[in-house]
Length: 235
Image (cartoon, rainbow, N blue to C red):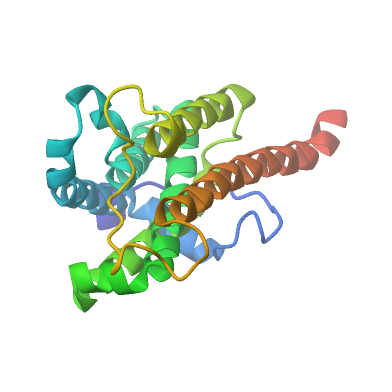
């Protein structure tokens, strides 16, 4: 078995979707699938780091609310599982949809708050950790755009992902069932941002928008794929 056969599989078919739905070059997507086990391993390492990063927050949150705490490591775990399932011929649309939603949402939300609350995060984490968090989370968003090649985003799968990330949004910012809200700690020098509203509201606003964005992208991808297949079905 050659190295590619050991580390991945031949890429699935690539449908000619609009660039805004499939922004990565085909060659980059192909590498991700041919070396899928490397991508899985990187995401599992990121998951382990993320759980370590949240270790103090776990101590402050009731155990029953723990599933809502590690948002970013949860997303990297989901994409690791989704890609591993595909590599083992056990792809599950609901799992892939969850991975897509999570990596888009958290991959973009974290850079958003890192910029919005720049002084606080930089002061608490230091330049190296700040840069690592910024780049690694953008990488999460980028890798989500290979998933359209292994799913058509059926409505049932999109419903599962929408339900989970809506519930997570509510627990993070609005109506925790037990204890306090579970959002990521938001350090900020002086306790208030340079916006005219609160730190929590700024973070929550980004989270709300970035729960809707992957929903739109997933449904738009589904519609685009269905349109491509209409001529074939008609013939």
